[in-house]
Image (cartoon, rainbow, N blue to C red; front, top):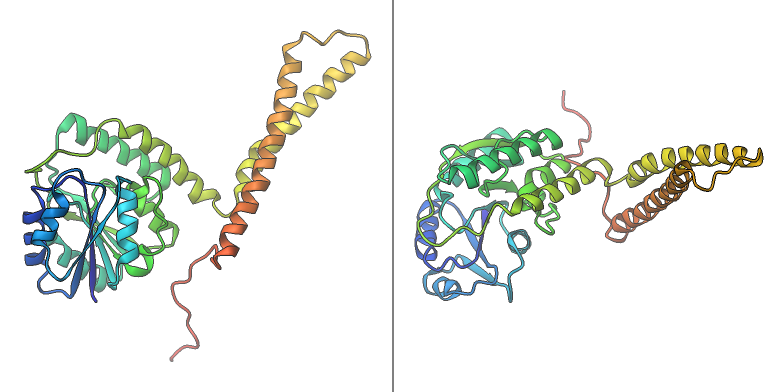
Length: 312
């Protein structure tokens, strides 16, 4: 099978018929499957899927709402295609862009082709401006230089998609997760439409989630396989400074000076305790990391290809 198209949906009953009609029409020249993942809809979304889905369509129905990241992960886990695409279920993304993205991936040798909403049809103050700020921060922090992290429309090689490790709400950082595997990523302009039915599932409150996930991504990028370098790098200097302070105060005490009420004593003790805790956390993180890799026969590296000999 050429393509598996993953579509997370939640409370999209009015969008199911036009969505599936559009997908079936735009992908008719491709050997594909559609995997719809219903993320705990409370309306007639599942009934509409049963009514309009064809035999190329598989539907996964969650027993409750787990979030878009989990829905994507479930869809990817079920996918059988050589390529895997993701798209929103509200018809703001356009399935007609997918063949173009597949052609670019295959003809130019990319691992991931990410969509960039060229003429985004969303509100300026609640959607576009916060998105631009978030994109800039993510781009500069992670060094993965995409302009539109919020566009769900993407096409992946199967080997990349199956190893993304999607948990929590990390779907916003899929390009970063792919880059951590050494994926070659390119961004292309895609169409974007105004939502015709239903309401957006996103609000300004997601900002705090993005910030916390960004911190996790920065840690994963730099210290996933060597956490002791982070915790030890912070803990050892703190421990040493605390010990120097406490030794200095011990000398003063030996010479008869009262040190019991000095704030410096509190600082020295706090630094020693914090340093020990950070170093210990680093040791534990190292053990967890090693257990993660060794228990699943994973490696901290990925190989693109192995060449044996050369043809001259």
